[in-house]
Amino acid sequence: MYPEDGFRELDRHECLRLLAKAAVGRVVYTRHALPAVLPVNFGLDDEGAVLLRTSAASELARAIDGSVVAFEVDEVDAVAHSGWSVVVTGRATVVTDPAAHARLRPIVPRSWVPSPDEVFVRVAPELVSGRELVGGRTMYGLNLSA
Amino acid sequence: MYPEDGFRELDRHECLRLLAKAAVGRVVYTRHALPAVLPVNFGLDDEGAVLLRTSAASELARAIDGSVVAFEVDEVDAVAHSGWSVVVTGRATVVTDPAAHARLRPIVPRSWVPSPDEVFVRVAPELVSGRELVGGRTMYGLNLSA
Image 1: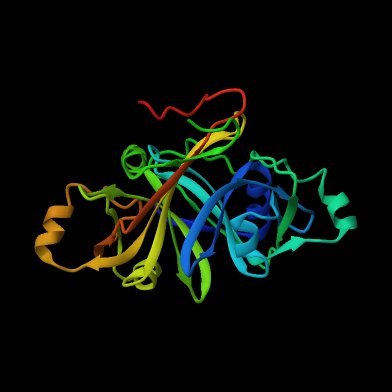
Image 2: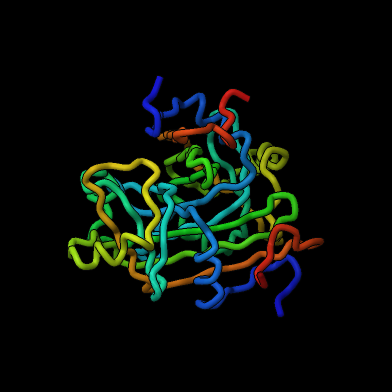
């Protein structure tokens, strides 16, 4: 299927399954014209959109609303030299519709730093890509079939 | 020192100490005008510059040479809601000087996907920032004093 010690591209279905198993990912965006990255917890909707909660007044909400961002999740075994990473790339939008708010509340985990002016941010799954690195000697730590 | 359930900013010394303990981080850059992110292993020099090995022909080397990138490392405990993240932001440069090559060889770990045309990339530590989130109930998984 793939050469030893090489990367294997993951298809959209595999990517979404790995995303669904993760609790924390990283939002990659632009802040003051510089690349920026922030770990956050998240949820997924049925279409594979990434859903975050944050304060409406947060720098993150202001920086990414309306912009294309990347959202990355990975699991890497530094000993076995194996692992995978998945990236969702798409436009981030602060959700303002009250009906959407009610729908998202149960599926998006609470922010670890709760705030009174919490908003949801949706990252559209316009591009979903991923790759797997299988270590030369072992697949320890990597279980894509589970 | 810091409010419960809130973030604490890490100083440069703490950031560099956490970076030195990590084996894998993520390069954040721009690819075809879109945000991109890639997990990689890395080394650090005495000044806190991040050092990577990659193929000279790789998309990564071509995309980041001469550009400002971010390099992120984190450790997050999704159960305890605690963890830290550190970001080095600065210009990435493919190292072409043979003397520098010889100096870097022992301190930069080998790429997990070795290639015959390997080059070193240095990310200058122009901006080093980090933050720590201490969970409400426990600091399990987070040991900044070690």
